[in-house]
Length: 79
Image (tube, rainbow, N blue to C red):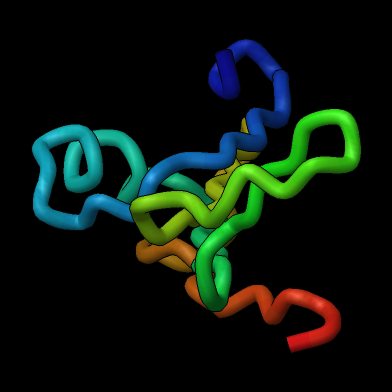
């Protein structure tokens, strides 16, 4: 879809040992690792943290001049 002009933003498990990571994620423009584990809530009740690390991945129609994605860490507020 990004090749059709759409900006794609995905919240994914940070599983760097998988085929999809190297095939798809490493072709992205931005890779932002989430520091710590995401916590889930339902109707104000905390359900606990995710069992895996997370990453936000962004694909743009036109990749920047960099041949590799911009990689950074997102720090959760209050940590």
